[in-house]
Length: 158
Length: 270
Image (cartoon, rainbow over all chains, first blue to last red; front, side, top):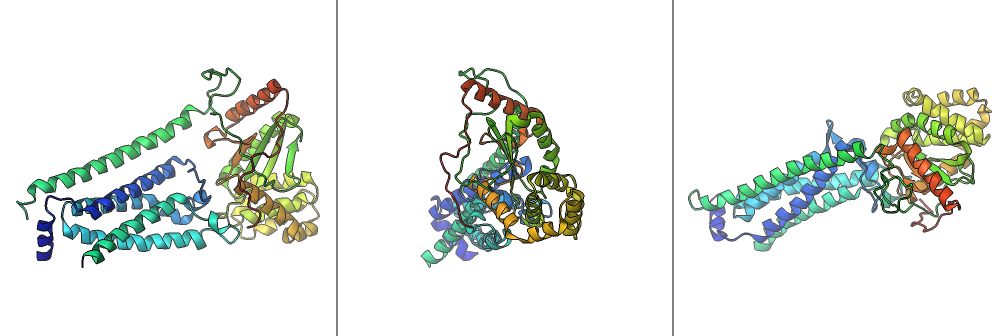
């Protein structure tokens, strides 16, 4: 706590750049998750030019937890990450630590979701490159980027 | 901390609050927007808002037909006339409930238009856990087709109309063998063909064509290469679209051949 306050004083009145970047990345993830949520409820097809596996992945049994689309959890997680990053950007060191913990958990879950797309949802008849959903990959990318910003800030300074 | 940051603490909270509001309101707005065209475009045709003044349905924006050099099973499962100016190509999955629901509509279209259209049915079993029997079902239909092309259509009809029965039955292959004997197949040969490579190769060829066209859900219906949006997959909208295509072909007096041009990236192997 003491430590946190010292750092707060240091960065007072100047916005910390790395958390600000993280906040922007979290917004991208939030937009992606909201987009997928809308498509989940409107039942419309998502354009799937890059990867081809969208419909398969988004309609799979892993796309929902207890009837709630995964993208809603994603949107909530990105919103929390965004809030923590913004608070950190204005100097709240504790929030930045929470951000680190949260994005670490998100990164682990993202890796699991990529594994599901690569090896579980499709069977061996689907070419490897066509097993993925690009919007899910974008989400994995934003999550991993968020985690990287947390890692960089942790090891850069100390 | 409390009095020093008093001025600062509000701004981040304001930003967070704004983002929350924008996310919720924007999300709901976009959801409503995505719903609107479903209601709006279903059946409106004939208002000449395009400067061309042709008989094109304005509900279908000008689209480049989807073409691929991946031909699918040869010869395709086809009804109607091979020389018709309008090609209706359906990619379907025998285990997909929507495909079962749209089956009567497709039959109606086939019987309404007869030789004025060329109807092609493509197997596109989705490879998802919920559709564990879909691939085998497509193989069953193709195996039936190896005993005469009309047998394919009889089996296809059997599979769609009895979809809920066999999908719920763990011993579904037995059920299909019953269908095979009902439509007058040589059941032993049907069983052999189901295990053999010919029927599977046809399913795989259709799958490859679907993938090359970026089919990612079933049913996907193409009229002269243009994908019909889901909200227009009803008999009225489909008839409007097909009528418009027939009229267009008549005006041009030279039927658009279905020869694949502009080949999409092909994927020969899987």
